[in-house]
Length: 290
Image 1 (cartoon, rainbow, N blue to C red):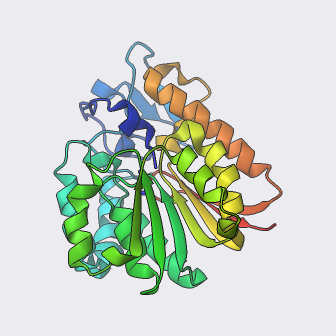
Image 2 (cartoon, helix red, strand yellow):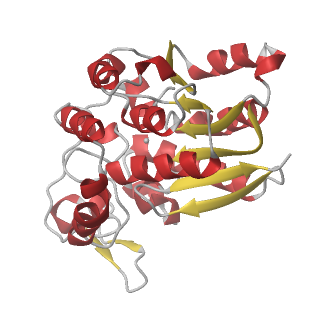
């Protein structure tokens, strides 16, 4: 679920870790240190045995999930997600999984959650900040009415073009308004037109974590009172609970600190009603109150 994803703007090479321990809340998102340097306490927290080896949060080696085991994750996917997966969602998921940066995509269970939320709230006009190949865009376009619209923002059209043929095949391309460029000026441009304030019913952000707070301020003006704002990766592989993040690579340290600050901001924001769910890599849902 990604519109400028920080990892896309920096374009780092996916870091592959040697898996020697069973998957867990942390190892399933590459938090288990290579060669078994990380273990888990009885409370499910992260216990780092060696600080010499830096660990990476995400890679193509493992799915994005905070569930206790890969087998549990597979059970959930095979029982509730894949059997109900739209054929076009499946096609785009498989195409994306073959990409070098496929791990950046929103996982299928998250797309399923977004789809249900959109239908439950009766959303029609939406904004997405962070697109990649368009898995969450497709999920949104399939869920909203035929005259609905998703404004999809990303710094690069290159990856979106990989998924566009599937979006067209699904018959929902007319609902997608793709805008290429940095999200901040695009959001500011939308706000320059007073008619856009409170116009949108739903917003989904999966982009550069350092700007989540700034996106939040702008989206609160664009999304109507009672509308929903959803933020992806707000638990960042469980690393937000670390007391000492020196065991992480510098890239992940920066993201972790940005997310911790954002979580604190949302927790104290009287303008929204919020809940944080341990779905995928953590998703925070906010309902605008005022």
